[in-house]
Amino acid sequence: MAKMKAAIFVEPGRIVLDEKPIPEVGPLDALVRITTTTICGTDVHILKGEYPVSRGLTIGHEPVGIIEKLGSGVEGLIEGQRVIAGAICTSGHSNAALCGCHAQDGPGTPHGWKPLGGWKFGNTIDGSQAEYILVPDAMANLAVVPDGLNDEQVLMCPDIMSTGFSGAESGGIRIGDTVAVFAQGPIGLCATAGARLMGATSVIAIDSVPERMARAREMGADHVIDFRTTDPVTEIMRMTSGRGVDVAIEALGQQSTFQNALRVLRPGGTLSSLGVYSQDLTIPMDGFLAGLGDHTIRTTLCPGGKERMRRLMDVIASGRIDTRPLVTHRFKLDQIEEAYELFSSQREGVLKVAITP
Image (cartoon, rainbow, N blue to C red):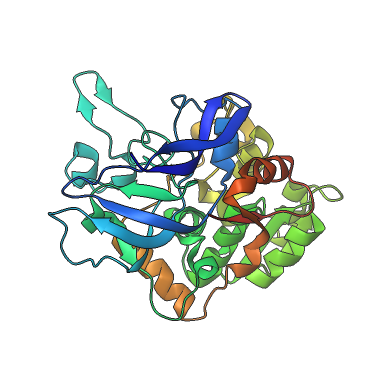
């Protein structure tokens, strides 16, 4: 049986490059040869043992590649096409999917549904940090990359851009809104760009890393607050003359940023939460106004599917956003362990890494 190289989860603290069989293609599947992928913060949670996955699983959920082989029942796609697939792979027929919540597309059981079921790559099935990936339900999940867009232009679409934009969308941002985005990592930067695209006329970015604060301005932030030198809650309330913001987007996954996002909301405002939390959250009574502030707290898991990917690539093709500057480092697949070490330590101003087999 033909083999391929893959980044495999061995145990907490160990993801190693090893060989696995190239997957067999089922009737509705597509085998995609990876040309570029990347490492996500969620992969680091997996590496640290903060999010459990099966030993032996190939990690990664952001594939860009070329269709190598199509299943016998796949229509509308051609072998040799350049494609991407979202981190979320929908089947389209679960209870969650039929309710329009494709990200939670897990199998229902008499004991309930499986949370995060739509996130399959690198979670419940083998992922993209490999030479090949098997994409299930290819007709629902593979989007053809338009001519003229290169791999790094579309690399953020499967997760980072889709997630960041969804933070703005879930917040229900309207023209003229004031929006605060807590943390300017790759997802926070895309949330900042998404807030501007949705019509926010004042976008406030909060971070402490000089390179990320500079990038936030390039992505659409009108104001940038360095939380090391300025209390963001006090400063945001000053900037809004005590009114607060219409939408606060939390893009880090920490107790401190969550409660600060809650404390800067105007009455009836929305906290849009994108962070992946590895510990229980506590809701502060003052920020929550004892439950009487008419606030909305929305959580979002990255939207996927080919139509979502098509829309995101159209945004890139239009020139309204350029995510290429988010790729700060590049590695070969053979260097995947080195790439994990750099990315997880957040050294050298790293934002995202491009991995090429």
